[in-house]
Amino acid sequence: MIWQADEEGFKPFRRSVRWEDARPVPLAEVKARLELTAAPNWGYQLRRGLVALTAHDAAVLREAMLRLAAG
Image 1 (spheres, rainbow, N blue to C red):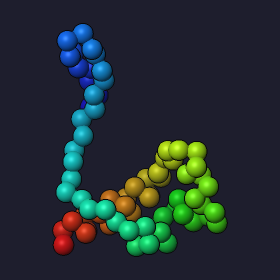
Image 2: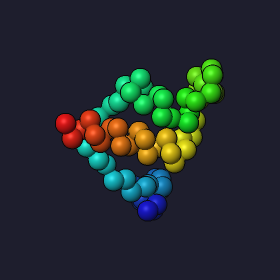
Image 3: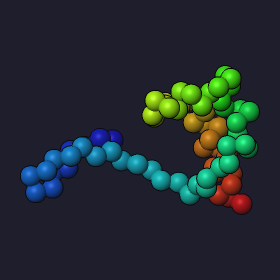
Image 4: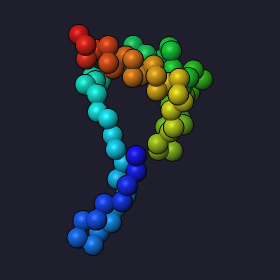
């Protein structure tokens, strides 16, 4: 959900976020399963800044991060 806050005349837009207990995942553990890293020289696209993840890659990373958090 997105809403506009009113903070004494400053009216930024805010987004609801559901935080989960997750842990960082080493790239080596998920690299072979990601679409982002499938092409040779995949790192060049990161030189432009932010890169959108596919739904597949987001699911792979989420699963790996939650699995590590669970123990």
